[in-house]
Length: 212
Image (cartoon, rainbow, N blue to C red; front, side, top):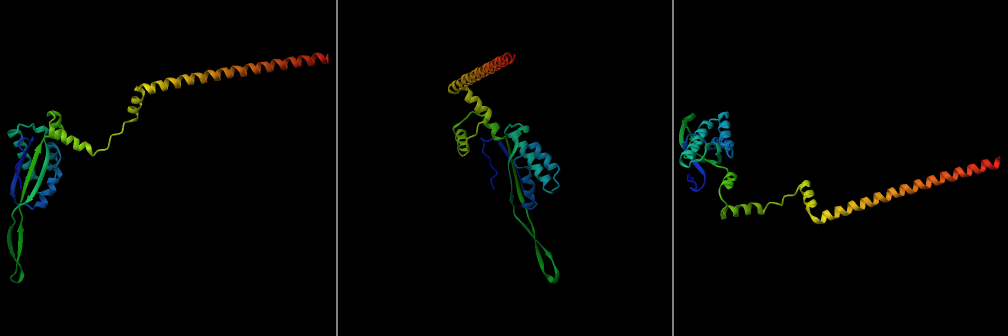
C-alpha cells in the first residue's frame, strides 16, 4: 500500500490504518465520494446511514487539512481525486459450540486512504504549458474523432469565401434576368389580349352595319 504522493502534484493524502471494519463495508462508502467535490462529499457522508461513513469523513477532513496547511491549497477548490480501501490483518477468535466444538470468528481490519487535490483542467489553465502537458494533450486528442461544425458555422464559412460570394452574385443576376423575362412575357400576353379584343369589336361593328 503506497502512502506517498508526488511532491510536485497539487494533492494531499490522509490515511487511517487498522480500522476495525471489513474492507468490503468501507469500500461501499468510499465509492460514494470518489471524484466528487469536497463539499459534495461531506454532504453525502453526512446523510449516509453506514457505519463506515463517520470514519471516512474523518479521513476526508484530515486530507483537506493536510492540503491547506502542508501544500497551501485552497479548501474550496479541492476534489477527491483518489480513494481506496486495503485489507488489514485479520484477528482470529473462537466461539464454543455444541459437543465440545469451536468455530472460528474472523475480525477483519482495513486501511482507508483518501487523496484530495485540484482538478486537472484548472491546473492546466493556470500552469504554463510544458512538454509533458503538451504530450498528454496530443495523446488525448489523437484518438478522438474530429468535431463536426454546426450549420451556422458552415454557412458563415461559406459566405466568407470569395468564390461563394461570386457564385451568389451570379445567382442573383440570373434571378433578376429571369424576373425581367417574365415581366416582358406578361406584357406581350397583355398586348395580344388587347389586340384580340379590338379585332372582335371591329368585326361586331361590321356585322351591325351590314344588317342595317
